[in-house]
Structures are given as structure tokens and as C-alpha cells.
Amino acid sequence: MKATYQVLSPGDVRSCNEHDEFASDLLYGMSQPVKRIPSKYLYDETGSRLFCRIMELPEYYPTRCETEILLRYSPAIAQAVSSPRLNLVELGAGDGSKTRILINELRSQKIDFRYVPIDISESAVSGLCSNLSQECPEIAINGLVSDYFVGVDWLSHQNAARNLILFLGSNIGNFEPAHQIQFLSGLWNALNHGDYVLIGMDLKKDAAIINQAYNDAQGVTAAFNLNLLNRINRELGGNFDPDQFVYYSAWDAFDGAVKSCLLSKKSQSVYIDALCRAFSFDAWEPFHTESSYKFTISDIREKVRRIGFEIIENYSDARHYFVDSLWQVIKQ
Ligand code: AVI
Image (tube, rainbow, N blue to C red; front, side, top):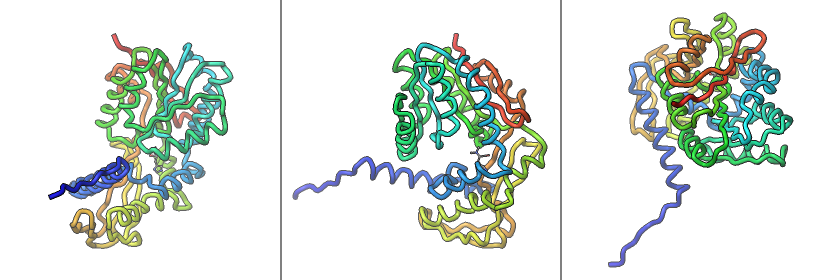
């Protein structure tokens, strides 16, 4: 008998893996004492569009604070990291608007650099590279589609250029504390002695200001969270009725984080095709969607000391709402 076989293209394999990961993360989260889902799943196409709207909201201060910091301190940052050759490495390709401020400063200080956005999403990296290369055709851009640490590790073995890693927007705050340490240790390990990290962190402040930022009057943040249910329905064959859930978010001063969730308005059961399972929700049971940790300068010092970075400078906005902290990797 003639053997038959099938060849799968890497594209098929990748999309199959992504789908499996979403399903197993959901199963794991739904099986926890408090039902939860990793916040990275908030960012499908609609979620990413809604997040862009959040960044423009009057209540959501972090983006404006970080822009203020970069506009004011880019000259000082560029001077602090100046070296004959620099890789400006951005983890998590956003729209690059804040990074452009730093890029313009590096150019005006005539620093020889290349811009390296790293993201697991090919479309995010290629979109950013093509926009930026149209706007600034003279800068060298090398997008990397990869896991952050694999990309950074590969890069730090390529040549003698110094690396400046950007992890802006307080994205670190969406990791649980143990994962924050794991992430920063992984980064330290992948970098060379003398490399730099510029990390954005939202600072602890008046609870009312924080609560408003996550409970905007137009309801964009609510829509951003509820969209998760549509994504589960579409990609995993769920039958969530988003009208039967309500967004709830509050600052938890004991844990130092905003905890966001969807509350089930009634006792109900939801079926997920991809998991071949139903899950029941009690009335007013929370489905945790995101934690947004906030920091103090001493929290930051403590983390940095434990891992092996040295703080070069903490750059803050006029109201001290947010900090871009510049660290250097120290290896003996
Ligand atoms: C991306 N991240 C830092 C945002 C935050 O503030 O936690 C995501 C967000 N969630 C609701 N509003 C903004």
C-alpha cells in the first residue's frame, strides 16, 4: 500500500499552538478558587483598539505622565546611555509613539543606534517597522519576532553594541509580584554587563485618582474588559452573554494593585466548546481579568537590589504619578 502523508506549514502549526495555549490558560484559570484569565488575552484586535482609546481618556493619566517624562528627560537619558553603538530594544511593540521621542533625541545627539522592537506577534512588529521606516527612513530598524528573552539573549551575543531595553507603559504592573521578579531576572540574565533597562512604573497615589483611571465615565475600560467574553465566544466557541456580566475595578491598598474583574449578574452556566465543558458562576461571582500593580520608589529599589541591577536615575513627572526608572546591569 502506498503511504500517504500530510505536510503542515509553520503557519498552520503556529495558529494551532496559539489556540491550544488560550484554551489551556482558560481551563487553568476557570479551575482556580477565584476564576481568572491572564490579562494578555485582553488584546485581540478590538481590545488593542479599545486600549488605544483608554490611553487618550482624561482619567487615564499613565500615558500622559510617561510622555511628559520622555519629553523632559530624553536628552538626559540619551546622555546617560551614550556609547559608540547602541541597540534600542523595545519589548512589546505598541504604536511606538513614546519611543519616537527617544529616537529623535538619539538622532539629534548623533548616537549610532538601531531600533529593535521585539514582540511575539508578527503583525505588531511588521506594522511598527513599516510605519517607523516610512516616517524616519534614515534609521536602522531590525524587528524581531520572538519571545522577549530569546530575542534579547540572541541580540546580546550578536555584537559589541550596548543594549538599552525599553519596557514602558507600566506593563510590568500587569504581572503578579513573583512573575515580576521572574521576568526581571530573565532580562538580567539575557543581558551583558553594562547594558541598560528603562522601565515605566506607575506610582502609588491617592486612591481616588487611581480608581478613576480604571472606571472612566465613557465606559471604555468596561468595554475593553467585556470584550474578553466576545473573544472567548469567537475563538473558543463559548456562549458567554456579555450583558449578564458587569465590569468592576477597585484599588486594593493592601496588595498595592487595582484588581479588575467581570461580575456575573446572576447564577448562570457557560459552555466552552473548545474545552467540551460547562462552568457555573454564582450570582456576583468575580471573573478576574487584570491586576495593575503600583509601586513606591522603595519597592523599586528593593526589586532592583535583589536582582542585580543598579539604579542610574528615576525620572518622574511633575506630579510624581509615574516613573521611568533607568537601570544598569551589573555582572561581576
Ligand atoms: C497595559 N497596562 C499597563 C494597563 C494598566 O494600566 O494596567 C492596561 C489597562 N487596563 C485598564 N486600563 C489600562
